[in-house]
Length: 188
Image (cartoon, rainbow, N blue to C red):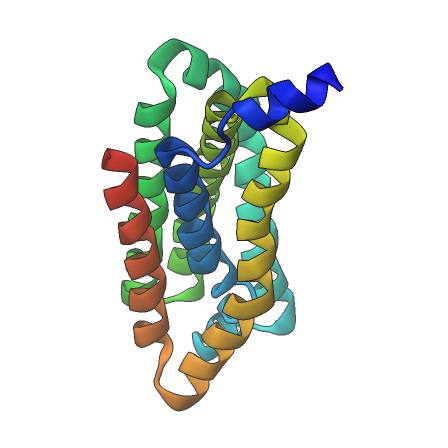
C-alpha cells in the first residue's frame, strides 16, 4: 500500500520526459521511413538484391561498433552532447543520401549513418532512464518505448508512399525534417 502511495506522488509526465519521448518518436520516424526504402534506392542506383541487403547490413555493423563506446562517451562527455552529435551525424547522413551518385558512396554514407544511430538511440534511452522517476521506471520506459512502436507502425508505409507518389529526395528531406525536429527539442 505504501509503495502505491509513493508511486502516485511522483510525477512521470514531466517536461523532460515528454521532450525525450518526442525526440525518440521523431528519430524513430526518420529511421523507420528508411528501412523499406533504402534497399529500393540501392537498386535505383544500379545495385543488385545482394547490394540492397548490404545497405541494411553495413548500417547495423557500424551501429554495433559504436554502441560499446557510446556508454563511456555518455558518462564522460554528457548525455545532451552525445545525443546532439548523434542526431547531427544521423541527419547529415540522411541528407547525404540525396547526393549519392553510386552504390559505393551510398554504402559509405550508410556506414556513417550507423554511427549516428548508435549514438542517438543509446543516448536517448539513457536520458529517458535519467528523467523517469526510479519508482516508475517500468511504466515510464513502457510509454517511452511506444515512440518506437508507433513509428514502426506508421513510418515504413509513409516512406513507401512518398517514394511511390513523389521521389526519394522528398522522402530523404522528410526524414531529415523529423530529425531536425528532434535536434530542436534536444537543444531545449
